[in-house]
Length: 166
Image 1 (cartoon, rainbow, N blue to C red):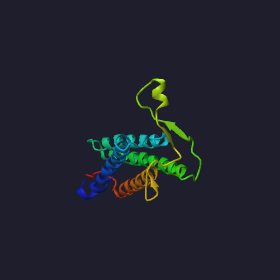
Image 2 (cartoon, one colour):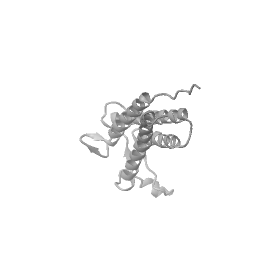
Image 3 (cartoon, rainbow, N blue to C red):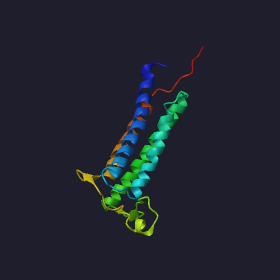
Image 4 (spheres, helix red, strand yellow):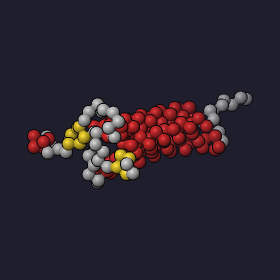
């Protein structure tokens, strides 16, 4: 295999690993350092990113090229799934449609009744933060769907390995 043949897949692997890792880091940072508690749908958006990180991580192991390719494609699918959930959540926040749930409560670590009652109530239909009119769910949708499209494009441009004919 020449370096030219491997380059699109290598770039796709990097995007498949770094994009969800950076989005998760941003979500956890905004939660733990910014005081933005996630609602139920915010949490739903995180799970596919965790899966994508694991799949993309395995794609960096010394595995056959076809398996590496498959792992990157599956990671792109997981990233796109998070983007689709983010798009749905953004639509709920902008009141374009009804959500499955209106609110959720984030646990604070305590199990007493006073801990439960003092936990912050986070509504899924109200954006806690926005920039240029786009909520965090909206940004997740934009970055995740755009990143998944870029990964799929790079995988499509990757030439399939050919068997050596001797």
